[in-house]
Length: 208
Image (cartoon, rainbow, N blue to C red; front, side):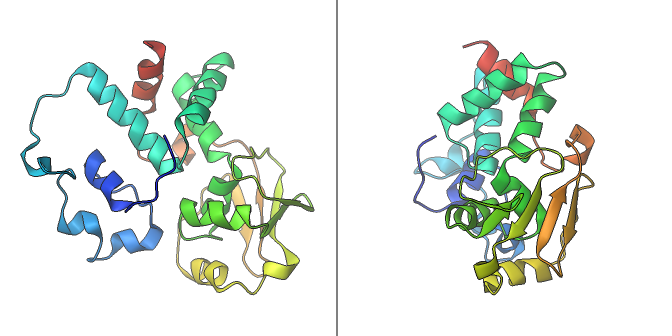
């Protein structure tokens, strides 16, 4: 999936569901999906064709890749890693995606969306285990300590995000007062609130 510079709402409309790519903005009435929930394009309102098995699997893959903002080459690498290790491949795939640094920053509440979290990480606003990090795809491990960098503690986007109530996942802990958080353990499928059909993604790649 190449870098997208257009409206994020087109992704939601194409997948037929809200992907919450803009965070809290997606819950407002001015959300583009609320105004036009049909697929984008000239014939979007008339798309009622029956989907093939391949199409269903492709849509599941595209939906998951767009939720986490992962490009095709990297997403396939996650699939290969998920099928290489022991356990349920679909759950392994979600666990890898959730363990990305940008996803952890978002789950901790330091950013209103994963896209915003990626930008903050790229701009060196966070440290992990005491060292500056600027790679959003960096995979975190249990015990990893993520903290807002010293020179970034006054950023309004971080404080505004923390002021909004968000359900915390049990595999993370956050100290809002000191602007830091810790990865307690590897997430299980039950602890990942992402709505996804991960097994269809595994089936999609396994047939290629």
